[in-house]
Length: 157
Image (cartoon, rainbow, N blue to C red; front, top):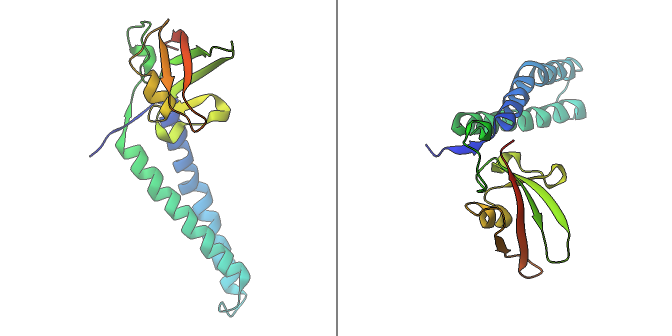
């Protein structure tokens, strides 16, 4: 089985979502289906069709999360010996030649959220950063052309 790296926080969030879907959402959908069936003919019952569609989406997400959780390899960067090298889970501050600073945490694919400052280790930027150290420049392929970033700080937090 292929193991997928994940931070402890990302793993806990996936487990919590899975538990919520199984213990709360799934039961609510079943009740909605039973209630819609009680209205009689289900062949033209929009409530029934809506509930069945939500059930399919819920079960699909449950199956996906079960696979994600089962294949996760939890990597806790706080338990690693800190250095100036970028590895999975580190928080990296970068600066481009124009003086623009960005801070990113390198995480697993399922955890990535640009809005929250988390990028996948498989993203172009993530791949470019892994293995490099503070003070080094990395060249990142981007749709708008190459981007150059200097690694200012690597934190094991």
